[in-house]
Image: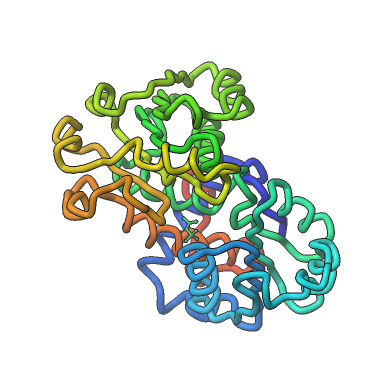
Length: 316
Ligand code: CP
């Protein structure tokens, strides 16, 4: 198995196969429940998480494997000064696969270089969150029957929102996506992500500040939380946090089949009333996150799902 630090570590064919595999897993939960028997996953979470850690762990448990780890570095030996590299050299002796979340950009890559087992990036600072992108892609696939040929609005904190960076980079690889980047000037998309769009002839982007004026054009609205933990200055956070609030009034301007995604957790940026709108897809995203992590974990440790036929062999 190979580490997954960014989705660039997987080919498009592999990503499509994971999407297919997750659907198979959902329909065959009992049959796959022994797939990873004897395997152990470590979740090393140096930052808070609800969905990512619990779904990585549930995914391994539902495949018949076991889980160790820590949630919050305060109980781990990092508090005594241990490096990420030494932690991974240690944990590699215990487990078959590691999921790591860390506040520093690049930490997962450092971890993967020190580890002798596959490492999956569960979020590194404001950089990347590849398994969230897998959940996002699965949600697009189930809503639209495809992940591209779409107008995708990304709204909120496009600077620090790592889920946005991973998603844009991956959608560029699929091609034919029109991005509408909706943010305040202070939270615009980083240049390395814009460069990726510019390097993709079939994709385009515009940057705007106002959500209401573009919402009617969108197939997908990907809302994000303003990433309080990445701000240097509390006043900047307080000034920017409520820039965008999606409520039923604003949603009435959108297409009837637009999909609203959000990696969660949300703060105020989606009103609770929107949860009952058929366009709200963010709790489906949560379910897809677990299924995609089941697909990824079984693939990374090299365990075949009973009865599963890989996508390629069906297509040829
Ligand atoms: N979407 C996501 O990463 O959520 P958590 O921070 O709760 O894991």
